Image (cartoon, rainbow, N blue to C red; front, side, top):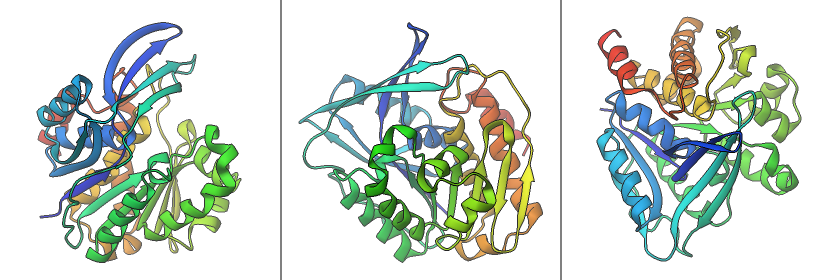
Length: 308
């Protein structure tokens, strides 16, 4: 059976509306996707690191209660679990302040043995950070050699723009490993200065088999060598958009896993197959925007499983 693996940062999100704290939730881009996948009953394994402290205990307990395997978590003593303050604006989008204290040795654990057609997702600044990059690249090599389907979400925000020239070669290297790239219009403006999905595909298409291009209320675009189409999204009044992209990623991974699609099939999927994958991702993302949770609500996940 295909297993799903994700790698990324783990932290505690403290969420503010204006200057008033609203809630505190375990978070991180890949973490949020993993919790959604755990609630959906998939064989999800999260690869990460956190301090050997009370915050780390809370996060690991939350993972295990939500069906996420914690076999590949490095718990370090020289440092503390990361904290993020998320300040929501009038559009419910977040501006972050981070507090991190990592040890010199990162991801100090044995990596999983990937099997052919397992699913592996990586991305965000975690996959670019020089302090962790060598270990992330080891993971990519292992997954690629095993024949896993690899999904990359660059999640490259404007606060990293001053480092763009140094980071773009690493982003391109990540795309070369990827079977599928899921990126927002904001990501691709910041990386390649592209203004449309077609311009983005011109930049990305030489590296990967497929691009899922999300444009917030503008909908979702799919580009492959043989397909080009657009899907609309329902307009809503979001409570928080913090977990929207992460849960969209979880929807794509869930659909790939549920359908049993293999790595070599990705570039050959037809429009109806892609529409099914993207429709699930849109549905998940919309649901997450309606609360302060960073992941698919448990009740929604159970209802979705029963009716799918």
